[in-house]
Image (cartoon, rainbow, N blue to C red; front, side):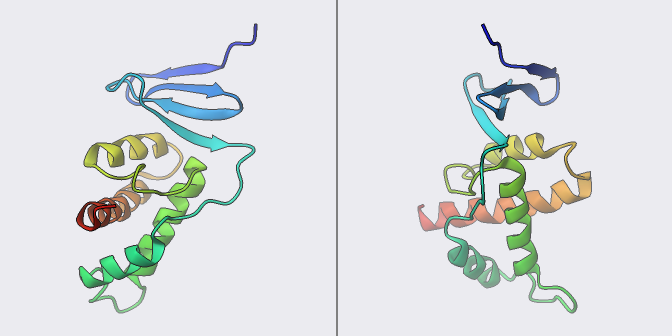
Length: 135
């Protein structure tokens, strides 16, 4: 019998490899899992990408920027999250603050804390957009 490799992290939960896909099983919510990077998965996408860009621009993200475009940076952050997780960014993935924390926990150790904070800012805006739009 082939058992999946597992690793227990007291802060993040149980990380297991099932069918060549690394998943994070949330210790605070048994049965809830986040699929992480899979060797076999290809390109990822951000569902409602144009709506997201419009939303953050209307909310004033980046209106005082002089060098970089924050809306484009936020989009880049979400793309990075999608690539690291190996899955699309969708309203089902990022709807609540708890969803954002679960994803951020899955990213810890893969990127510097400051980068994960930037990712969380972009994810919070995405979650707010999905809630306000009723997606």
